[in-house]
Image (tube, rainbow, N blue to C red):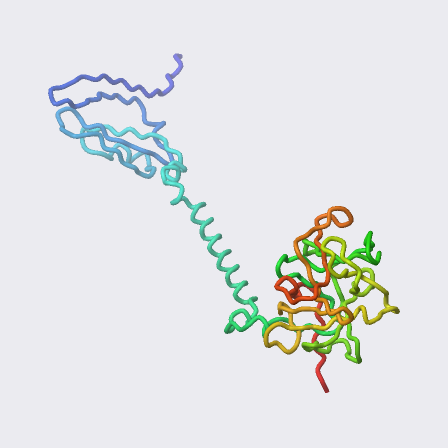
Length: 317
C-alpha cells in the first residue's frame, strides 16, 4: 500500500509586466494548515485587471473556517506570523511603558523630597531678615569658641610648640583650616560671673586654650616676624595673672557679645590689640601666620566668633 503524501504548501508565482505597470501574482495554495496562528499579519494581492495597490492590514487570529471567507472576491490572503512584541518595538522610547513608569517614579521622588525640605525648614529662615548682630547666637561664659581673623579668615590657634626667641613660651599662630581642634578657646571671666552669663561690651575676659589648658597671654617681648608685642600661651588651670586679661570691645551698637559680631580684644597690661597679618612662619609652624599685639586700632585687628559650643544664657531669677 503506498504511503500517503504529507501535505505541503506550494507557492508558485511568476511576474510579468502589463501595460498598466501592475504587479500580478498567480498563487496556488496546496493546504492552509500552517496559516492559523495566534497573532498574524496579512496582505491582499489584487487580481489581474484591477488598478489597486497592495494593502497592508492587521487582524487577529481567526478560526480556519473564516480564513477562506475573508478578503475580496477573487483575491488570495496570505497570513504571516508576527511576534507580539513587534508593536512595542515600533514605538519611540518616550512612548514605551517602561519610560513612562520611570518618569512617574522620578516625579514622585522629587515631590517627596520637596515636601520633606519644606517641612523641616527652620521658621527663622522664612521670617523677615534682620541684622546679624540680633540674630547671632549669644556668647556666654564657659562657651568654647573659635576666633576668626576677619581679614585673612585664619583661626586663632596654639599648640605645644614654644617660640624659639622672645619669652620661649607656647606659641600662638593663625591657622588656615577650620576643623583643627587646637583652635578652640574657652571664654572665662575675671570676676564673679558664672557659666551661662552673657558677656557685655567692655568686660575683661580670659581665653583658655582647650587642648593645653594655658591662657592667651601677652607682654613686651618682640614677636618673631614683625617685632611687635609677642602673644603667647602661659600658665594652667591653677596659674594665671593679669597678663592673661583682655578687654572686649564690640564694634557697632551691640551691647552683649554675639556670634559673627566684629570685636577687638585689647590687652590690659600692654594696651596692645590682638592682631594678625599675612606674614607666615616657614619653620616652627609652616603655613601658619603670625599673631601679635599692636598699639593702634587697625582694620586687621578685628575678630569674629565662628565655630564653637555655646552655652545658653542663664535666665535670671
